[in-house]
Length: 216
Image (tube, rainbow, N blue to C red):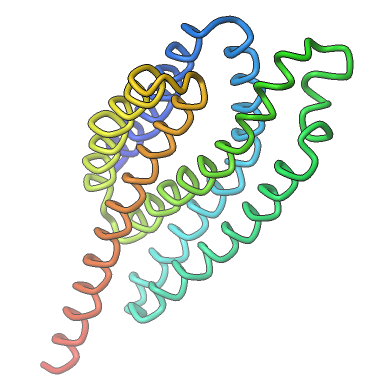
């Protein structure tokens, strides 16, 4: 189980690095602003990392004790906690962007960097929901003992959808750094949908199999 998990996290770090390189092509101002916003996203991301691991442990305990009926409830509560937190953070991003950016840029920073960073905060909101969702789904599947599906789906979402979407939105549509962030969010969003569909199918199968065993 460990190898796919390691490759998933390595792949996520890699696509973030690719996005940084693509944004760097738009100049120092875009790169500086993106790095600041990315630090904010990374800090918030730790909450979803914890929820992912926590839900994985709870689901594995439920499955080990033949309490398959608890699996969907654990998933639902995990997403409610995540989305409630992300909604609060997103509102702060949009209502108080200067206050949010001040610890990173201060009051004497270049106005251009501040302006670009404030624009990217809008995309950071969507990115946090998409990225958080796919990471939680990875944890849910891990709790069911399925790590290979996570690797397959993240590879599709990150590299077959995310990278082309970043290039298309950033360069073809000429949306610049905003397009790169949008494309990355699309990639994570597709990944989350693929993983959630797999989780629903796997958890349904587990409940069905348990029911069949009980009938026998």
